[in-house]
Image (cartoon, helix red, strand yellow):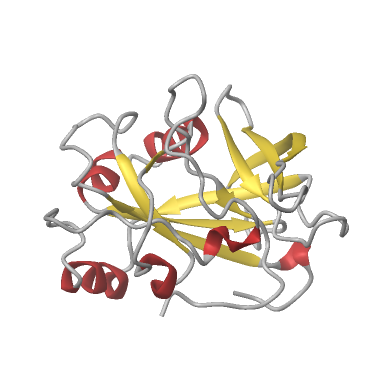
Length: 206
């Protein structure tokens, strides 16, 4: 990840299929674990979340739905791509501050729409409360297969085997606010996986 300004920064999120929550063959119903780094992915208490319509749209457009259902995928995000050939433009629409009872304020969540579709996803602003927002007004996103080293690491951890361990949430990632996100909204609908906003420091998965 680049250490340049936000508009030139590219950051990533790794998403791994969770077989413990069900063996569905529908990308809309499957649940996934996710993390920016292997430490986040290895956290002892991660959550199972479905994919938002925006990511599902991108996976189908890239013909990666089957791969995502089998193992997972990687998301790359940038405010200024070098080339726009394989990037999808997503435009900011609205933002809402999430309130946390213990501290009164929480992270800002921005809603983005994939250009040319009605598909959307949320992005969480990692800027501190009351600081200027780091969410870009225009965002380019692309999805790809898991890199070979990442897939090898996932297999070595037996994350795709199911078993008795609980699927983890990214406690370290949710430190920016929603430390214990609910599994479902008040109306009973499963919450969709949010994307992390730009980080103020570089990171790699390993």
